[in-house]
Amino acid sequence: MTFGRLDRAGTYLVLCTFALIAIYPILSILFLALHRKEDLVTGFAFPTRIDLSSFEAAWTEGNFATGFKSSFIVAATVTAVSAVLSIGTGYAFGTMRFTGDRIVFPIILLGIIFPYEATVIPLYYDFSDVPLLHWHLLNTYWALILPQIGQSVAFGTFWMRAFFRSTPRSLIEAARIDGATSFGVLGRVLLPQAMPAVLTMSVLVFTYTWNEFLLALVLVSGSESHQTAPLGLSFFAGASRAGDPTKVAAAAVLVALPILVVYLFLQRHFVRGMLAGALKE
Image (tube, rainbow, N blue to C red; front, side, top):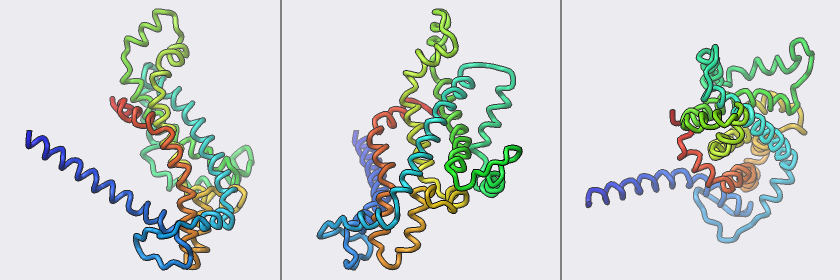
């Protein structure tokens, strides 16, 4: 019994230690944002007087309304399209056997394995003049949406395939006996059970897409109306870091806030999706 208590205490100690390591820089940025420009802040400093003027100034001067609009358009579109495509491909690879499935699935996984940084420069030249179609997609939302859908579908297919493979075959066979089609099995039997996994995948894809910086820097930096929030934060920080670090900290908090809100609203489903064995074969 004593050993069990010591083991539990050691586990909590390790978890608390890593939690503090993760929370410390977040609180440092938040507390810096709550200070005034005139305050001399060094390191971790709790504000004696809360001042929200830095948030208002950062939002206005950094033109984050445009950046948030662009980020929401890109992240919402990528998340929605990737979720629909990933559910379909994951269902096919997880519950069906067809010619070439053992070849196609590893090819899809290349989207996870292959470093996307190596594709940025080719994407720049391809989008400057799309082959055959002669479309110019640089400095448009499509330049960000299309590549990230491709990356997210690779991850989503792997995620949903693992979930569908862990689903009892008896459910599928019972639905087949009742006369359900493949779409009926997916929509009426499997998809309701898969919602925690789908929401967890959607949160991860939304977070990854919202925080994407390199693609935005290369593909849409020439259009202010299409610049995303992280890209706007980078430009704003470069211009304001020396003059007013509190504004930069406030801008960083604003850019990170939507991710926190999404996670808080979907926290229960996120945890359920992780614990449901979404990655369990």
